Image (tube, rainbow over all chains, first blue to last red; front, side, top):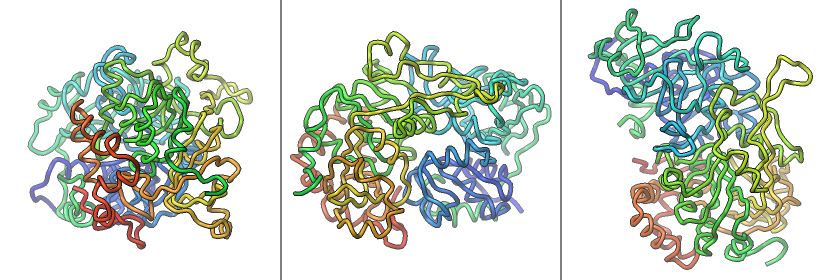
Length: 256
Length: 319
């Protein structure tokens, strides 16, 4: 099975791919999520369907897109339309099983900030791109998978701005907010994989990446992270690495 | 020129300072860039932009000082830059007014405007700060009739009281400006590939200006009317502008230009470098024809030319 040398990006792409089940409808954004879905389609989930929010359904990607509005997403697509069609008929109607999200901050209930840093969003110290479709995906996908860079300041107790709602304040708070379904099930970070307790919705460390210790992951997290059950992340197989490098991203668009 | 045909300079001259505008396209494709550059050459100011996921079209206009206020979901070039540099600087220095929505809710707002209804119910935003927080408070909304009186409104469905929805206000703009693959002199349009929200944006505007890669005859588009999503009566003016979206892509015509996008993003964080970029490609060139020469002319566009098999350039060096 394993294990040649691999990069952190490759490890994360493989971890993202493994979260996808065969036959699922996946809403994916630019970067690691695209690598993950394309890898999943070429390994254990050949029938998973990729939707890009700019308006395509079930692309057969031949080249890695650099945006969801890239002409490359047209390759082999079953349907091409616009944002309204995919946001309403696919996402809002509950037909999307998995959505991928990322952001500058992720908190212990999986809420994500991709809007701004600072206590007052009207006068932020740092401004980012804003939601794009992230808030919509966080609200309306059946479950979400978050990709994040693991640093203490990026994993605070509470994000400065909830661009994309996760489990909100934990427990049943998401249900009470009026959201019909959904919520994050995994955070694939540069240090490990975080999951959420079924009842409290509290984050816990499910695995730490090879070469790290669970304690080091907790130390680089801004909230108290339960590491008792953490095991080592299963490293990429040679076959997964070969497919990623040769078929998914031979141009090294994201695998740099 | 006949019918709705107009030249680019005259079309841009129709936009008064302070106008409300939306531009077609999405992050790295089909923005009406030649039109945007012409707005900068004509020194427009106080523009009020509405959009979902614009890219460098907004960023360069904001950097040039042409924009006072925006309502948006996202401003960046995705893999080329995760945040628009001039947008970021304008917010952080307090030089722009803005309001945050999401892509779905902005497009729902254009759809309501296009359909002639006052709002659209959606299931998004609940639990988020996009719902809880307002950048434009009630007092700032009251003094500007162009801004909706409220950001949004949460209500129970009148048919099922336990079912919550969010109402987002319709958008009607003075202008929508689109860049499309094919248009006729009569304003019949062909958009190839993803339509993004161009259809809703056009139908939510009082005046629609279209720049097109090709002007074709009416019969050729009427052979497949199901592929012409915007009725010609909604289109006011048509300009023939080949390469009008550069450095962004136009499906079936040309790819995005990684060299040009890198040059923009490498410099745009620095005031002097941004000014040099404007001088070199926008204010220092007379018109779109000169812009095409300034970015490298035919040699550059040969590199970007879409392959008929793919609709983009499969061999383009992107990194």
